[in-house]
Length: 241
Length: 236
Image (cartoon, rainbow over all chains, first blue to last red; front, side):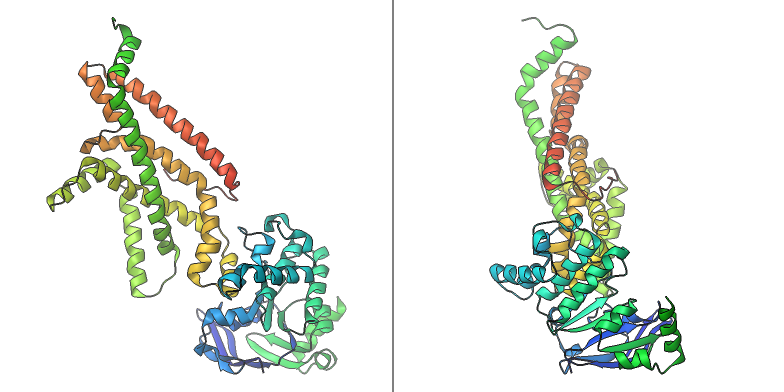
């Protein structure tokens, strides 16, 4: 078990955003978190690498309670891809993928460059190594962001609505890159609104509503036999699109 | 040689006081350059304190100090500050010369302005980049050093340069504690013959040459670093 979330609670002010969340992630799982806006999906994801501090609960990473781990070291093992890409504008594409490796993992420059280049080739950005992020399209930026997350050789990657900020014509290229990343066997947790993509790529679905996980089931089961009315409605709306 | 008329007097003052005026130019440049560099370095630390969210008591105290510092220094004239520093240090037994005191004053003053400039620069970098830096394992400090500050400083270049130019002119107030910078050197030369207008014309022209050439130089520097993403207007 790579990740174990136990009784996670998070409040923003008086509002309970996450109400006692528990779930497990096995190695090699591709988990898509679905649910309507405001259901707590992104907050849950951000709690996993402590960009948000949970109010209570435990998160175990490879069996170790993350409370006993160095947070920066933990984060090198959990990559994150953001909705708004968040590339470092003062660094070129290659250096965006190198800085974590050299400054945190203490890899040599040569080694870091080799790994970064390999990952940038994987996401199809080989021709853009010395370009500035500002010269790239949204889809290209997100592909670099995925390469940046992969460059630290994490064992888990979190995707926070990776295509929500993209123009429609760029969604496809990013989704196919994520499918490409899936082939490496890396464990992924993806918050998304792309139902078709979730259906194709994921092994398990977490369906969230109002701060709780309503369903945690294999992807096939979720789409064929949703257990709750809420999930049935959600899938029905997707089918009608 | 007979000196006569406005330009004649200008010529005579320059001829007789060339050395003093050159020293004055040197001191003015020293004061403004030193003040801007030292002010910038301290402002890097102060701006960090100002934007950092630190719930601990020590963090709150530091933040309170910086806030008061910026408010007081920006809200009072540098001339008044210079007099207070110069004589209060003497009162507690630190006997310092006017130039050292002037360097101190202009640094303290510039720090306050550049703290605000850099704070704006930091806030102009979207928070997502900071989160991304943390997400790949960079510590808070390293995220600031490697990702946020390079962009914040670049975005603030125009205002930092402007602060230097303002310093060239404003250090003239340091004459009140007896610093013989450009204005004071020219004034002393003019007073010798009761020719204040002529002497001040010399001062004005030299100030203009200094500020214009600095501004050109800074423009070239800015172009080399690359145009800022969002220029920030100076506050003074």
